[in-house]
Image (cartoon, rainbow, N blue to C red; front, top):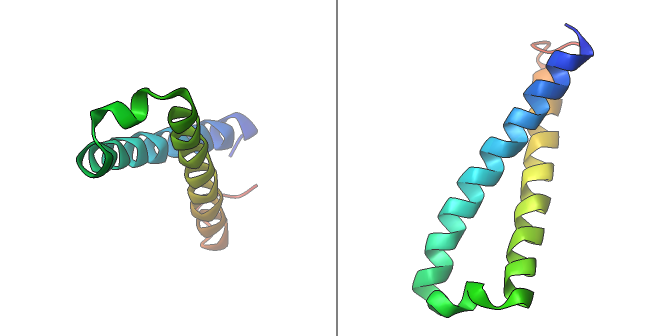
Length: 74
């Protein structure tokens, strides 16, 4: 499999995890802390920083499992 396809798969996994995480967590934050919590710049930065961290870790884990199960070869 070409490197461009592996990068495309990794980016797609990252974006899907990021979308799901941010959607679920945004709803939780609005219920728990109120709508104004995400309007503060510092809180918004913390929210997206955690979202990127979780997406990166999830992408690494999924790519590792795909390589380990010999679905992807790189």
